[in-house]
Length: 99
Image (cartoon, rainbow, N blue to C red):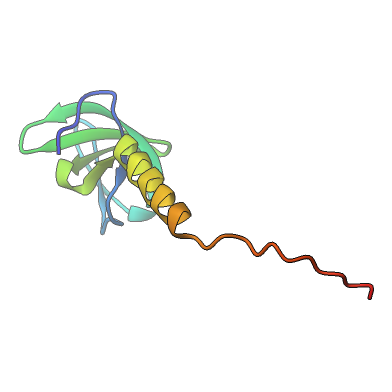
């Protein structure tokens, strides 16, 4: 996957820990970033690593651990369109509860 600075991304899976993007990085607990939270790529670093800004901090993450938000939305809309065409049509019989 290719990401650029400014792209909106989301974690592919929950992390076991998060590494801060500070000058002296620290390991932080994984609950600082929700699995479905959207972050923005702030910098691209060597070794396929990106600095990603989330609501509760900026963290260093492998690009393999990220997915672009636009791709998620396109995949979801494709799946919704497929499921809508496969859905059975509504029953059109009239019901009369009073009689």
